[in-house]
Length: 435
Ligand code: HSE
Image (cartoon, rainbow, N blue to C red; front, side):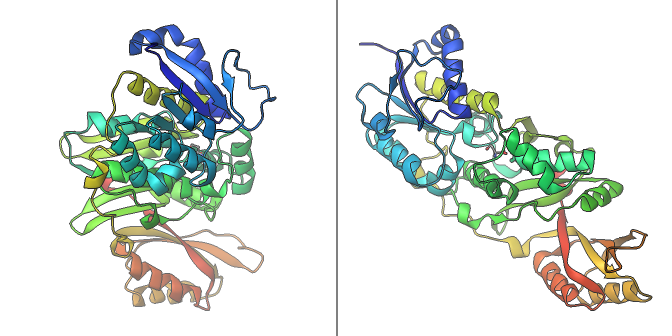
């Protein structure tokens, strides 16, 4: 009997083709590294005729990906279809049930069903590996599962969506509009099939929910992630932030306090000179704070063929070597109940941009309204000029530390204020943990 690890791949998009290439081009090295050959037995994808620039001669083609789950000659199913439901979920569930190892890049699937899938994998003694689901080429899952096991993790701060980071960086360096830059990111192949998952913060939230479970030993809890996207961030905000010494980033944060765990994804002002502020373009980064190791930052490409395929290979190699660990470090039945949503109690200082009517006394009236809402102001900046078509000028306030509910009340008051047009835009300022 062959001692090779027999692999079936479902999904031959950018990442699937990348995995096939590595298996072929690094075959000699991988066989030596694993002590056994990695054998691509079968593949399944939607379109058999498409030229993907890969050699599939000698590899069985299955029109139905579910055939991989039932095939007697496959040990490991690599799921690269995507989506939290439908065929991807059915394939992973059926493969685990059939006692096959699974490696997946599917963050939505793991974020929504990770705990149940982990239980299914553990009951069969097989692997459920998902390195490629979080932060592309950065080996953060492996680091959390293995290298950081001696730590109690206090917090995770991540830049987990390459598309958003690319857009914000381009807006900063070129002054171009959000929509224009999003189109570039799509053309470059970074964005999800539905780009609202990227810009709306959902993709980063999928990844954060997975990391939070690894960090805190809790069930994967996507539903309790507070999510805001970058759609409302303008080049004006990026310019103001720069004047104040900050970069605008979409941050994904999971942190533990005495009250519980908060998981949040939102745009944030990050002080220049800190590691996360320096992460630009499609790069991702994860900053982990562990009680023994202290602050640790891993940075790398978060999307694209090579980095994501690299992560899938890490999962495959572990399985070939016989390194089968509980998907979320501790057995799934021992994961603690989901993290509670604690966003209302969260405190920070805030950037608040509004459009003020250009009349004598308007600024005094607005600051009075903020004082009535118990908001203490650290800084006010008004840009000169003629204002917009209605004569309204952008004004930015930076507040002292306050909590979310106080800020929400203040924004409601300001939105109704006669000297303010529209609802003020709010961006949280994150500085404490990042220095
Ligand atoms: N759309 C994702 C991103 C791809 O932009 O980061 C990797 O998950």
